[in-house]
Length: 111
Figure 1: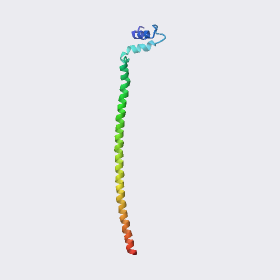
Figure 2: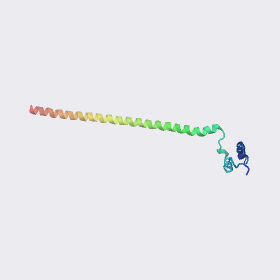
Figure 3: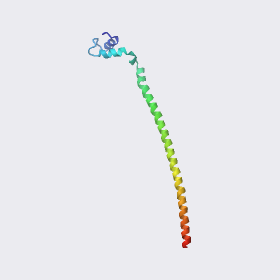
């Protein structure tokens, strides 16, 4: 079993037998799939950096969307509270007018 890639790896480790440093079966798999081997530091940086940057961008987009939805939700809640406050004011004003009319009627009948 003669694998040129394995011999180059083994020679860089200082041995040519292959028994002590490298499993020749895994080296054979690596040598057959040369398209999966990262050869330069740039490829390594891209293999790690691109997913990290894409995840960071997705997280920023997600947080922006959630923030805008929360802002819209807060505005809707504030509008509802303002509407309810106005309804309560009108109802209390009406109750106050009714109580004033009854009190005026009582004062006229007693006094």
